[in-house]
Length: 250
Image (cartoon, rainbow, N blue to C red):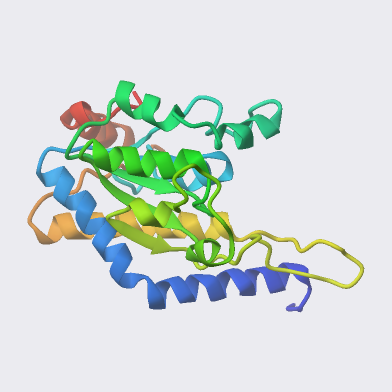
């Protein structure tokens, strides 16, 4: 049985956003996939970063059945997980200058690598500094963000810029400012955020595009299989060993 309650309206809203991304961002997604394929074939590595709930789409492509084994999470202590206590600490760390630079300068990233920076608003210090400093260090940067925030809000960082201003490729998630798709009479605040659904789909689309680009070049993409199918663990052990120099989650 169908209906038009909040659950159905939310799913319809998410489908609408995904349709917009498919229609309007196919070129940027393909360009992002090409950057990853370029880095892989040139010996580079691939990292993804997001803070708070924006870390969820980054984590979704790391060590994932059906995904590229060489996708790595670039963590910032205290800013990635939603298990930080108090939860407001993670939000506070997004406004700390110098944190992203310290992570990049002491971590595994190097020139010729690719870094995907995910930030819904793209206005806070941490994602902006992460992208800008990464480019200074010679990395290619893919930004996944809502361009609407750059049009309707002010930057919350010393540079006065947004994430989109420091990327080689920007994929616009189309999420409205406030990240809440529904309103109902009697409820004062809008609710039902869709950013995780849409951004996770974008990340999977970028990885799929990278795998397709590698295959088109005659390069076998280093894909992982499910460990819950026969032979999956053996397959994954081989892939992980073959690409151990580009994997940082083991």
